[in-house]
Structure formats: C-alpha cells, structure tokens
Image 1 (cartoon, helix red, strand yellow):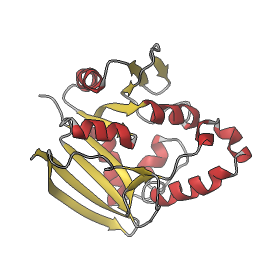
Image 2 (cartoon, one colour):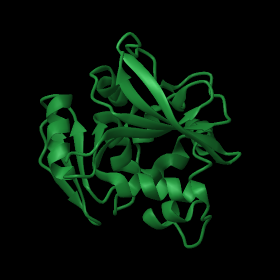
Image 3 (cartoon, one colour):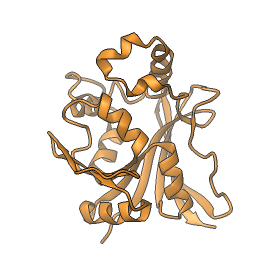
Length: 222
C-alpha cells in the first residue's frame, strides 16, 4: 500500500517559511563571514527553527553534537524522519543545501530534485542519493513513490515547490510548526494557493513547548 504525500515545515506567525532570501546563501559556508547581509538572515532563521535545534534526534542526525532535549518536540522530529521513505525538493532548496549540508546529508533516502537541468545522480555518504527530474512534478512524485515503497513521500521544500504539489491536489497531509516570530516578508507558504480547490481538516494540535505549536491537517478536495 502506498504511503501518504506530506510536507512538514516551520512557519512564522505571519506565514513565512524563510526570511527574505539573499544571494550569499549560495556561497560556501566557510565564506559566509564575508557577507554581512547573512547575519540578519541567519538570526531570523535561527528564531524560526528554535524548536528543533536543541532536540537530541536533530543533533544526532546532523552530527552536530551529543545530548539534547528528549521531549515531545524531539519525538515529532524523529517521527517525521522515520515516516519518510523519499523526499522531493525544488532546485533552489537543493542549491542552498548543496552549499550548506554536511558531507553526510540529513535525508538518508532517495531525494528527487525538480529542475529544468539535466544532471547525473549525486550519491553522498549516509545513504542519500539525489536524482534530478526535469519532466515535471508528477514524474518526480511517481519516482519518489517507487523509492519510498510503503513509507511516505515528503515534499521537503521550498515553499514554491510545496505550493505546486498542493495546488495540483497531490498532498494528503501537512504539519506546520508555527513559531512565535514575525518576519514581515520572506518565502510565503500559501501565497498563490488555490483555495477554491482545497479544504482542510485539522487532525492534531500540539504545543510541547513555547517555541512552536505543531498543527497537522488532512487535505481534502473542496
């Protein structure tokens, strides 16, 4: 039996999943200190993701240190990882990640990158293989479903790619970690959503800590 298609993102209270992008994000991390405009971007990003950085599972998965918190936020991070059999992302997210991810990328599954370019698969340590799909979102999803087996497919991001899948009626469920921060501008998750075709059913709401409220919705056709 095929799994679900879902996305899981952190979002500011005013609806942004990332601060206003800056070109320097594509520079190698060792050069980031040469780009002062990144300081503000990174500060906002850290606020948005404040709920996940201290979690033990997150720290172990990215090999950024031992220890960490082990409450419900940690369980949510681990459960999201464990249900994911394959991921899909847009080219912009991949470009940023290619510069910023550690050598052992944090997915440990097949990842399908929606792009207009042709490129051979890129296999990295830790069980992550990036495949580049240049014939549309449906093709990427078909390949991701095959790779995921009976596990779920996660639309990892960014916001534009998530919106494409949502408007195409291809998303079954999503979770938003709503952070108590305001950006004023940035990557808007629902800017351009086809609300005439989409109905939502809230299936869960959790607030393990003041850092985020986790809201989970099933997606229905209107």
